[in-house]
Every structure is written in structure tokens, then in C-alpha cells.
Image (tube, rainbow, N blue to C red; front, side, top):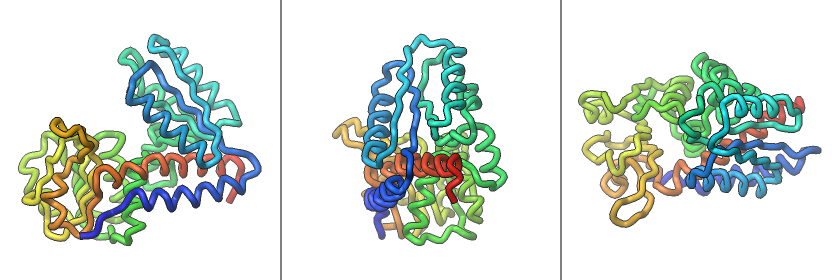
Length: 281
């Protein structure tokens, strides 16, 4: 079993990005919109700001009141779209229930949509075109590439169908010539399917759900889950790591596997947007 070390891959990417940003005449700028005072959102935004600071990227946060209207949110997004100094726009979720997040994502310019949630980018992904893609799935693809894990012709099973991980993950694997099966909460005989997977990506938010009897000998197991253990309060994944690890060829730990790649991939998307806007080839 080989442990897929997301921390080391992210560190390597970080140094590459830092050198690239240092070569630019002008710093890229990321604009983040945060609405209300959700604790988790605040933590995630702070992590993004810290990474921007480390790479030499400008970070602009728009912290909006929880009672903001939809029209005011859309107006801000349009203002950021029209600001040529802004290279990437990110709307931090969750947002208050009275707001329409899909309309907000649709309003973000596809050229500045560094989270990959605008329908234009989603459509391009489905068609196999060049586009911005959701950061976590893109980070997983980078990990697979870094460890020289062959995807072509393999059976990849993705558990989870969210727009953030499951669906874009399936499309990226399909575009890399895998044969892809998507499973979800209504899937029947789940273990019969997972046991056929050469590559298993799990993103369901159910701690230690995947056990050794559910996987194929020698499978590549990618655990996207982030759960807090009710007993120890430690962060654990959707895969029962101790139970599964000796049956895998490769496996990601939680924490330290997929997680470190998500923000790095966001930064890569931002720099790609910057280069597109500056016509840097």
C-alpha cells in the first residue's frame, strides 16, 4: 500500500506557484464574497487568505450582512466582473437560505469563475472543453497524475453526486478515458458495485462508511470525506482507513490527503485566469 501524501504534493505545487507569481509584473487578485457569520466559512476564507499571502497574491474579502438582498449580491458580483483588476471571484458557501446561490454562480463571469460553478464552465466540462473546474476534483486528478496512477480504461466508481465533488469528479475521470459509475444514497447493492472499482472516490460525509469487504484487492481509494469523530473529536474520512489500507494499492489519508490540494487548485485556477486576462502564454 502506498499512501498518497497530499501535503507533500501541495507543498511542491505551492513552490511552483510562488515562483510563477514572483515573475509577474502585476499581482493576481482574488475576490471572496462571504455572507453572514458562519464559523466554518470564516475558517475557510482565512485559509484562502493565508495561502494568497504566502504566494504573493492580492486578497480582497467582501463580508456581507446575512440580511443582504439577492439584488445587492448580484450587483456586487457584476461590479467585480467589470473590475479588470479582479482575476477570480469566489462566493463562499453556505449562504443564507433566502438567497439563490445558483443565480449567484450564474452571474459570476465564466472567465473569473475560479471555483468552476458557473453553468458555462460546467457545460464545457461535460463537453470535454478547456474550462475552470471545481477545485477538489481537480486536486484529486493532480494527485493521481503525481503518483503515476493510470486512469485510462479503468473502472472508476464515484460515491456522491454533489455539484462540488461527485459530478465534476465523474466528468474529469470520464474525460481521462475511465469507465465511470456514479453511486449515491439511492443506489442498490452498493458494495457489489464498489467491489468492481479500480479507482474508488468517496465523498458522502459518512464516517468510516467504506470497509475492506466493499473494495477490490489492489484498488486505488480516494477519501474526500471530512467528518469529526463523535468519540475522539478527531477528523476522519468516509473510509475506514485502518480496516481498508492493507487491501489497497494506493489510499489517501484523512487529514492530509485530498484536503491540502483543494486550496492549491483554487490558486492554480486563479493564476490561469490571470494569465488569460494578461494574454500570458
